[in-house]
Each structure stands twice: as C-alpha cells, then as structure tokens.
Length: 76
Image (tube, rainbow, N blue to C red; front, side, top):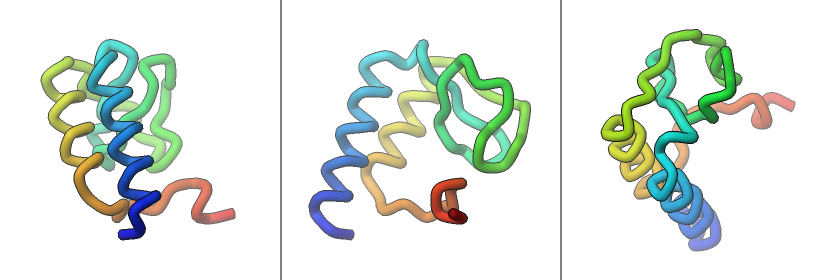
C-alpha cells in the first residue's frame, strides 16, 4: 500500500477512535459510517453496531490495513 494511503487510513481511524459516539459499524459489510446515516452507503444494510468498543475495534483494524472493500466511489 502506498505510504500516503496508509497515512490517510490511519488518520481517519484516529479521528473515529477519538469520537466513537459519532460513528457506527455496518453489520452487513463492516464499514464505519456516521451515526446519522440510516442505510450503509456501501451495501445498503440497515443493521448497525454503535457501541464504542465495536467502533474502536473496527477503526483500529481498518486503519492498519489496505482497503479491501469496493465503495460507491469506486463504481463511478
């Protein structure tokens, strides 16, 4: 993974970890999204885990590895 992508993912993860109450984890695709979202923009699921522990764990995991999921932006 290029250094800039690695740094941006780590920075995004740090932002989420510092405010886990602003985010939730999609139970369909394990993406992290804002608590205000009603549907996951990636898989359109409506089931989420908003516990701080789950958000922090998922942000730490996603921030430490390369992106493996396809996002809506990838399909444009």
